[in-house]
Structures are given as structure tokens and as C-alpha cells.
Length: 402
Image 1: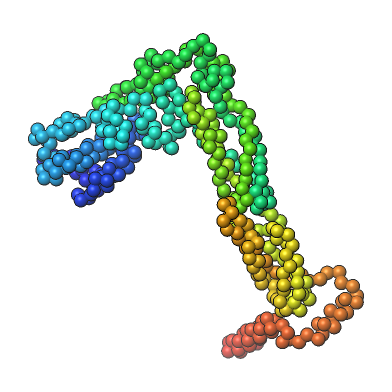
Image 2: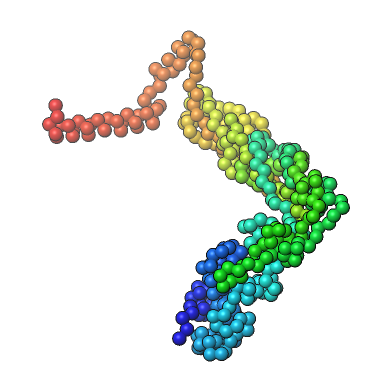
């Protein structure tokens, strides 16, 4: 009886799983346990081989049928299966070839590592091909702008120090008298093989860095790197409607590629400074406006500052502090210009200061003429307070408090 794990359990799928479900499950495990991501980890390597072996069986209709009927006995009784030797004899090289074949990488291992790096490049940096060519890194630039720039758009000129192709060697890394040569350590393969117990471990060649080539006479200007840091000025058009966190992508304006590879992209992340008068919420603008006491009481009109200039706002008689008025279509437009927000105006009552004696006398006379019914909110508070004191007195009497 075989002691090997069940293929379905290894991949974490049901026995009715479709071919696509099996492939997705295998890809997830292979990405997690691949030797290139777990160097020197024998346990991860074993899990990688086990998952590959299970996938090789379940992805083949004929092998899967035999496995479903007889289990591992179908292969341990001399049945064998294509792709591997007998059961229990799978080695790392065969598993790597099966993995590459399953996801379009061909059947010849990983050579200079380009297939695996292409699959996981987003996690480990840009892959290099034979000759060291690689896409330049994407760069991030955080830019602080004023509120007015976000509202109406602007143009900025960015000054950066960016790695680019060396002008002296044109990005080759070699001086004018020499050319890149095949690495003698790895024979141009970019990988070297070393023994690790019962397994063979493939690693990038330390002599050429996995490129398969080396430079005997490096360029003096860039010391063989092929790239140098250079000052660069970039013009940036900021559209109206951007907000904090908006990200602008400038294709090809990132770090220069290695050995003639394409450049990366530049991502500009915007941060909008707060404004003293206007607050923003999405595409809406919010403003707090103090209004005179007499206009709040009698009604009238005040001028409200907006993005498009002062706008008259009618205040109804008896307006209370905290009331919000909406000015339609006077907010911010989105970056595509398809929609415009509103302007929300919240009013407060400003108590006049520095009154003349005559104005003070008039205000006093006004106060004497006002009745409690003219202040319903204050009357309501006084009523609730009286009820509270009455209940408090009743509790003290019940306790016998003096």
C-alpha cells in the first residue's frame, strides 16, 4: 500500500474538480514553494515536487482515470507515467521542466531564469535576459500642490535625479575597445548547479549575475553598470479635479533600462494642501460663513465666496446657526470634466463687536421688546431644566434629605 499523499489532497481540490480548477490550485502551490523563492529550503522543495507530481497526474485525462480507479498502485506496479520515472523517483529538474511546460515556459528548465522572473517579476524586480538587458524600475514621486492647482489644473516642472543609459558607452557597460563576452563560469547559461544533499540546486551565476555575459574592460564613466544618475526635468500637466492620492503615470519617464532595456514609468502621487476658506469632500466644496444677527432674524442677502467668484445667497427670516444651503453646480469638476459637484454653505451667527453707544441702546431696546416666545429653542431648554429640577426635588424628598 502506498504511503504517498492523495493527489487531490495535495492540491486541495475535490475529486470532481475541473481542469481549470486543478491548474489554478497547482499554480498557487508552485508559486508558494518554488525553489527559486525558497533557496535551501528542503521542505519547500519537497512540497513543490509533490504538487508537481500530483498535477502531472490529474491534468492528464488518462492518468487521472487510472489514478481514480487504482490510486498510486496504478503506477507502482510498473505502470509508470509520462513525464516522470517510476513513482517516488521524481527529481527537481523534472519538476521544474513540468512547471515551466504547464505555464508556457517550455520544457528546458529555467536557463537564465527569465521565465520564472517573468512570472514573479512584480515581486522580485525586473527580469534580465541574456546580455543583462532589463526594463528600468518604475519610480514614485510625491508632489505637494496648492488647492487652486487641484481645482483649476496647472503645469509643473519636476527636477529629478534618474538613472539613465551612460552616454559614454551607450548603455553597454563596456569601453570602446571591448564587447561583452560569454561568462566562463556558467558558459553563458547564467545559472550554476550545486549539490544540496540528494538534490541539485540551480542558482544565478555569481560571476555574471545571471546574465550569461561579463565585461572584461568596463566603461570608466559608469564602472561597467551601463547606467549613471543624471538630472532630468519633466513637464507635468495637472488636470483640474485631482485630489490627494491621485496618481499620474508618465510612461517611459522612470529609471532607464539596463543594457539597452526599455525604461520604466514614473508615477506622480499628488498631495493637496488644505485651504483656509474651502474644504473639499469629493467634488463638493464646503464653506462656513458667518452672517449678521439682523439678517438671520429678518432675512436678507449675503455674498458667498465660491470657486467662481462671489455669489449672492438669500437668507430666509429666522435662519438658525448651523443651517446649510446648497449652491448647485458650483463645486469641483472631475478630472474628465464629465460632472461637477455642489457648494455647501453652512451659516453661523456673528455677534457684533465694538458697537457704538447709540447702536447699543437700540439693541437694548430691541432685547426688551423681544418675548420668550420669540426664542422657542431657549424656551424648550428652560422647560426641560424645570422638569429636571422638579424630579430631583421629589427624589430628595423621598430619601428624606434636608
